[in-house]
Image (cartoon, rainbow, N blue to C red):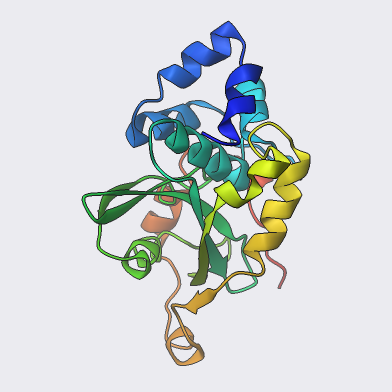
Length: 214
């Protein structure tokens, strides 16, 4: 399993039992849902996510990619891009019978798991559109970058070294970008209604929300 070998060797008995229980995408999502959303500004590698039991969206997606790799999926991530007035959002991808799904950690209820029913990455990315908004109630999804195969970072031991996370983050800024919402469409977008806004924030940690400037 390439870079996964050092991950396996680094696990304690208790940590291995946790990881061994994550034998499907939905169980990986369940693990992320069970841990607090991190408001830290630094990145945690997958091993540290297991140990600290916390993750923000970047940490969570990279952890999910590592966990998906253990059960036979390639470790792929996709970066959802905002309008510059919101955070970017990272997904771990998986594909079953030709359909894409995603696992994700998020402070917003609607930006997490997607069933593998999407025929293409554009379709999958657009499934996040209505739930992707900031505290000014602006719908902020504009595109995506990727996918990025994390196997290319195996020599950096990305599954066990926090330092490798910076290289992954830099690479997401360099890879192919796809525009989903252009300026003409953006000018017609409405604000999120009150009911949808509140629903998305169920369980959110206010400290982890993007601070929108006027």
